[in-house]
Image 1 (cartoon, chains in turn red, green):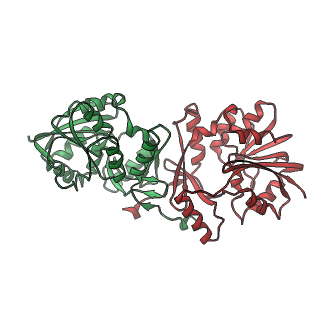
Image 2 (cartoon, helix red, strand yellow):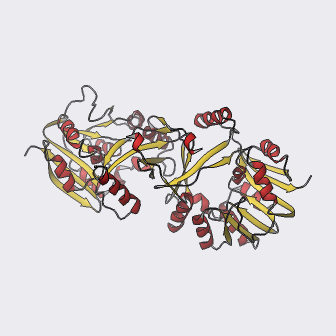
Image 3 (cartoon, helix red, strand yellow):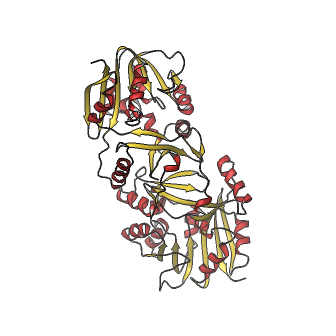
Length: 248
Length: 248
């Protein structure tokens, strides 16, 4: 019977989770994000965290937002929790997300937001003084094979003197199922924290993508052959904010 | 890359979810039950519902518990929410569950509980005046091909004059992803509400099993060639309690 099981349909699973949570008033317990990893691991998070009000953002997130200035792009903005916090204080901020559902929710919440990604920005997006990769979106660097391309893509969105402010997570953990995965990654030539994941919701699955957990030293190494240099690191346990800028 | 994904390990995923929830004080939001269906559908429920305190049980559950008498077996007892409600009022109740993790948690909570199933009851379990299939556990009838065997198995656990008290759910729904699944079931010769599911948790997956959503008419039909007869039905929306007893 196992062999007869059908795969899920590919679609905007992440966007649908956000939409359902938003329609339930962003109430905790109303919608869950299910993340499947390519070792068969399933993780669950409450989608309400994508709607955290500005005053409830973590100290690290608030520190990161404090580094934003000028024309700001929030990359992978989701439902807009970070960008809306900036917009509220008068910042010139635009959101960017590849999920049509996320873009729809963020727009409903009053954010100026565009559909697209670093690799495929919408026409006319222009350049920015601050590029944000919050909510652990330094993960979008993907892996050693892709990070250079992503960082060069970010440079193409940057004005002279721009900064990149991102949050990331150290992959080191005592959790056996994650340690097993990191060991498997090493055996197949990937960075230990290079997660291959997709979002699942009902009969929908989003596309598989690589999402990188990397510590500050790893980030410095990935940036070495790019125009970006790490200038500041602020840590809190396994989490950190990195501020990078262009040039030597 | 999709082809290179590994399957999860088979294990007691359900028991691990219950254990984690229990160790977090059965707090809502502390552990989630992820149910995968063989069409790729993923559903998520808060595991705290397996720890509902007696006073917070639904009216239908309380009606069902009111039909229990004599020596009582709670089949698929999970963390023991129903059996503990009966034990608190002095009933002679034993729990039965095939999940070692569930049995461990139920025992920690003070329930007399045995590891096993209808098909494989533990030695010396004996016979009962009331067999409970609560928490939608009429679903354990499985399907048209298995229900007879399950009902005969239940009869072998029954004392003369015993009753079977179970809760079930009507499969009829307006939800497109469930309607598609019911149609697929019909095409492959299964009952519409015959769910093929397994529990997933982290890198673990429980075994695939059939779980049947059936309305009272369907239940009567499944019981026709068995010693059981449906005597009472109590409905509440899509949910119902059925009381069956032995003999004509």
